Image (cartoon, rainbow, N blue to C red; front, side, top):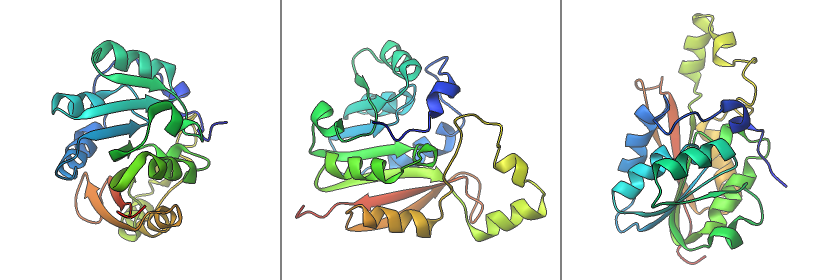
Length: 211
């Protein structure tokens, strides 16, 4: 059983190159990787672009995605890296293992009808003391006010985007959900554009060292 709202079936991964969000999310994610990190899993890896960057930096990384198009592109572009076509569900840990140092999920959670499934899966995959980085579009008061003043709500919430965003998080709602899913603490970093008008926010969720 899957919790995906079919984002990638409609996306259609045609090549293995960077997507628009990689320009600002990928550098920030790379800067947030804790020291001594070795084993990483990228949930919702899409066409494998970020996984390729991680592999090039020497990390032991696995990319997983529900999209057959994405995984095909990823495997073709990075033949030495492990990719698995699998959904975020209760069978994920047995399929790829556990005790990862870091779990990454970039621009995925906003597509999920049941986003807690992603967070719980990440928690299960991590070793005690591990971390999870979850990026999603930023929604804050000043940004929402700017959208209102610009008359840009219809453009921002694109209802004609099949398989698009179904959840819209603030730091408060995402932070609360992260803690509800077992993580010990959560902090936020931001990427893209400028202060208070960021394009994305990144939750840095920490698992207790005793769990």
